[in-house]
Length: 214
Ligand SMILES: N[C@@H](CCC(=O)N[C@@H](CS)C(=O)NCC(=O)O)C(=O)O
View 1 (cartoon, rainbow, N blue to C red):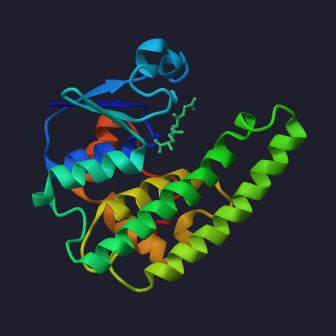
View 2: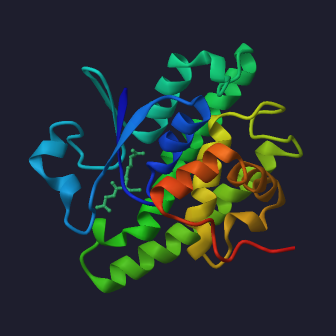
C-alpha cells in the first residue's frame, strides 16, 4: 500500500490523480501547510526539501511530483499512462520535463515570490515577470500540442494530468491557461475524468470557479 503525503490543491494533485487512474490502494497522509507540518523533522526525513508531495512505497521514498508520476507509470504499465513507442515516449519526457522544470517553476515564483525576495517591491516585480513568462510558456505548450487530443497524441498520459493540475493553478492569473485553445481542450477532457474528479473530491477541492461555462 502506498502512502501519499499531500495537501489540498498542491502539486500532490498529479500523483493522487495518477493513483486514482491506476486504481492502486494508497493511504493519503494530509499535511497541514498552515501549521508548517511539511517543515517538521519527521517529514523532512522523507523529503529533505520540505516540499509536497512525497510518495512512500514500502521502504522506498520518492519526492518530486514528476518523478513520482513517472515511477507510478513504470510500476503500473497496464494503466498505459506513458506512451510505449520510443519517439512518442521522448515527446512525453520532453513535455513533462518542460512542465515541471519551466512552467511549474513559474507558478512557484508567482505563488511564492516571498521565497526569493523579502521586500515587497522585489516580490511584486518577480510576480509580474513570472506571469509574463508563464504566458510565453503556455504559448509554447499550446503550439507544441497542436490539435492532438492529448499532449503526446491520441493516448491520455500523465502529461495531461500534469497540464490539468497547472490549469487549475492558473485560475488566479489574468489569463488562465484555458485561454489557449489546445490547453483548454486537454484540461476540459482531463478534469472531467472520474479519476481526476475522485482526486478533487478526496482533496476537498473544486475545479476552477472561473472555468468558462460555454
Ligand atoms: N519541485 C517540487 C515542488 C514542490 C512544491 O514546491 N510544492 C509546494 C506545494 S505545490 C510546497 O511544498 N509548498 C510548501 C509551502 O507552501 O510552504 C515538486 O514538484 O515536487
